[in-house]
Amino acid sequence: MRKKKVDPIPEEFASYEEAAEFWDTHDTTDYPEAFRTVAAVTKFRRRYYEIEIDADIAQTLRARARKKTRRSVDLPATSCGSNLKAQLGERFFLAERACL
Image (cartoon, rainbow, N blue to C red; front, side, top):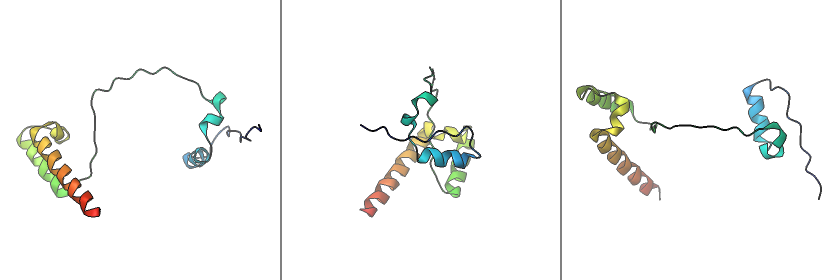
């Protein structure tokens, strides 16, 4: 069985783009000596979701949050947020169904 020819990893990349281009065309499993295993302990305190919404909807949500003395980022955790999630889910479902 012939060994696969592996290009050497450059000592330094001139830019992030150059590094990205290199790793887009090379497999890290071909360079086991270049990487080491590290122990990492993490604690996830919260989940964060990003959804794109129209500016007018965001403004309305911020106004509702101020009325309830809540931060707008906390809205998905509130009953208002649950309702919002249900509405957005329904709209997403309908939009997906229309594409079929």
